[in-house]
Length: 308
Length: 282
Image (cartoon, rainbow over all chains, first blue to last red; front, top):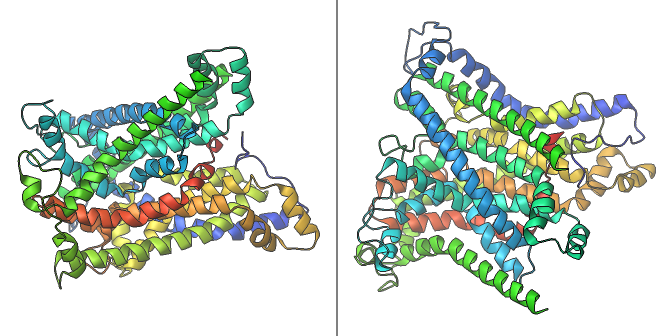
């Protein structure tokens, strides 16, 4: 296991007081650049979420307490968006972890021209999200898309399918497009975990004639728990923040079928100009992300204990 | 031995299949950017273009004032300035902060790092409206400086994280030896830590560049003209406007993807070392 940033550094021969002072000055630029930008907006958004602000030019903005939150939580559109977000999270994370695990093992295998394989795998991750979205929008196009062309020419389908024309199908297609770009990143996270495993453990397992599946289940998987937990947290947070790919592929359509919670919030705040509601929704996203991350980390820490 | 040989062949076959699956969509986009429009809309589709059509690239590189090309070229310049500046800021600020996290003892060290990392959980949309008004008040809406500042706040937590995790892996003895010889802490940072942290630094730079190049939401809301519009915004506009000419969108997309692809391919061997795993557990 590599050392972690959170393990305490050794005492070098400097006084405590001077270390503190140096740490303060070294961290000051980062703190200013990050918190200087975000602290005021976070507080401001929290305040706006308690007021009724229904246009950018609104002159009357009455205090409404938690009414925005109540209205959000009692609207069916909100729950539909949360449902789609959870579906997006679960399906895309499961897909990316499964494919990513296989890909990580391939990346770790002894391959000729491994550098070339790794360079190819890194490619989708480097493609900007908006370009990725535009590319898949073209591939899934109902009339001219290459997917329809390929499937009909191979005789797999008789007629062209409107891949982005049906709410449920469109959500799945967005997940596929997202997985193409993100699976390599997941694979590299898992690869980082794989390369940290001591090869001697495998050697002794082989001497014991353990089966491939057993080695995977009792050595590889437990050792990868830290990597997997990071992937789970990152992918869940990303799913709740997903905006770019949906904006560029479907604009939330058809029939709101791909409107996940971040996009739903964007529509409430900017298309409807309901800034009070948009702010309340943003805070709901933050709270949900916080809860999910905490639960994940708890769960995974416990499961790691039991696996060890 | 034969068993091993068979396994090895299977692995290579799997790798080739995966490589093809990864490359196919991208290859089609490249092909579409060179294929004449009539090939792209024909049924059955012509996979091999009947001729090489460079018109989209000509339009992008030579289109006059107010054309798609001039917007694209301005966006290319803007994206480059923004990404390079954000990388520079995030690296300088990140190296200094990471040294503190990895090497110094001070109260609330872990909590401070956690607060930086927790900012990643904030959806950009939660900051969008107040930031818009601040930038407006400061006259920084639709400016590169404004965009560089807000993008840096997104990227710095990542560079801090990657660099901190790398710096702690550098043996303390190296630094102690230099310090006994009378080098100051800051001197040790530049003479000892930085040269031995090259993989971590390359990984952090690469992540920072990809993040900055990819950033969309701030650019979408805070920029409105060629003065500051970045490539993701320009491309999402093309894709919305020229729905029938996929070739043009494809050509723009490929050009926008080339810089990050080149950087990722060159630096890919540092990706793994940059992913210090596990520190979240604390």
